[in-house]
Image (cartoon, rainbow, N blue to C red; front, top):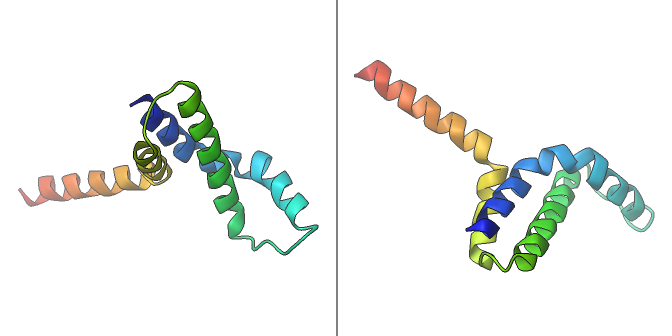
Length: 95
């Protein structure tokens, strides 16, 4: 369970680490090959997921499946929350 929570936090923090963490990595990689601007967020997600996997392994907590699901839910968490909120509000208005 702890691995899931660590991964969810990593997914949620992906946009915040895009500039300070993924930016220097992209600049380094661009010396060797072209990196599309849309790939910067993906690199940030991969770094966050790697950090989550290392922490989960250090705490001996969570499975690979739990870490992946946690990272995905963390990454899309705000959007999922807003969608559910809109659905619930729509049901309250209809009823």
